[in-house]
Image 1 (cartoon, rainbow, N blue to C red):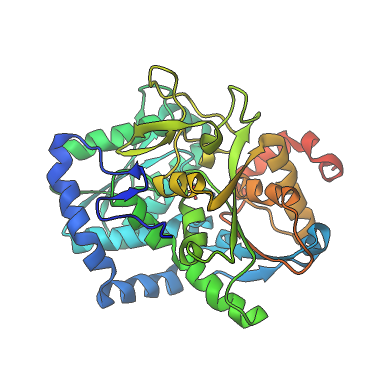
Image 2: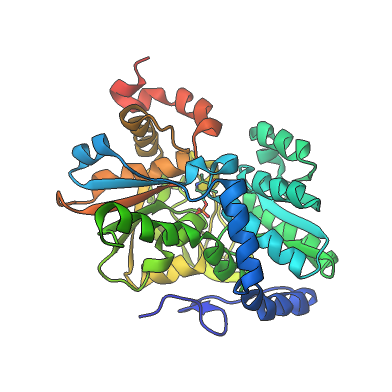
Length: 400
Ligand SMILES: *Cc1c(COP(=O)(O)O)cnc(C)c1O
């Protein structure tokens, strides 16, 4: 079995590079160069030095004692929430900006939904002294005002996008449009395991540091380098890809991923793309997308801005289709409860995205000795308002 990308940029039937003709040369150039660069000693040294001293890696692997007792397993949390800028996204933007520099690009563009990837991109552009332009749906610009101000403080220009639903999907389209106008000097830093080949593979490699660390951290803590279960939330799929990267072909390791059910995967208000999607092409790749019978993209719905995307990366479409991963749909109310539970039982306020993975713990029939590694993709500071607004869903934990 091999779940990695093939020579042509596909994961099974998913993936590929469906881009406008004007981008062919640029995308082919990237396809031809990225592996050589990211596998070079020079790149690896710079990348790992920044991950260590700037991002604060390795992120801890923390044994969650009280949650382990509650769920009858040995639960370890991979703490991506402790990274600089508060989530796993910085691992990827550090890598891509180094790649952009080595390819001689001078201008950076990015799409963002909630603003997390926009902030992570603006951060590394400030670090490298590079021009940064971020495309963000006008609806999100209003909803995520603090992140917009952070990006501006960091020196980025934020372009509100007023097409479609004015959210993430439209921001992606607009970023691709901008790229078409400036293919020579511009590098597009994609925020998740999506987009045309080689982006899904590139982003997965940049996030693979997560499972690289899990391996030696587990060895150190329990004397074997693999868990029985890996768990993560899944939007576009980058923190999940990083969590499973070095274990994909290891059948001893079960993989359980949590996608955003919204009000329920069988309702009209959902972002559970693997449950609900059908094969289509979105933002340069063939993947599972939520679309109507005419192929019109349907709006995703979830309480979690970071999971609010009507598609999911091709690697994950293939692994779910092959039965390698089990994907659970976690509804808004379950995620809120999961977030409060981790807060009260371990003193960790998780991002509402990560709370979906926490909520999935209740749905897996663990045995007492099972070693479970769950990635906390980000911290919940940005979600405090959402948690408070929904505290009635948190049972006893909401009585304060
Ligand atoms: C963006 C984001 C996600 C979802 O993106 P993936 O590419 O699926 O990882 C999850 N958690 C946090 C904290 C995020 O910021």
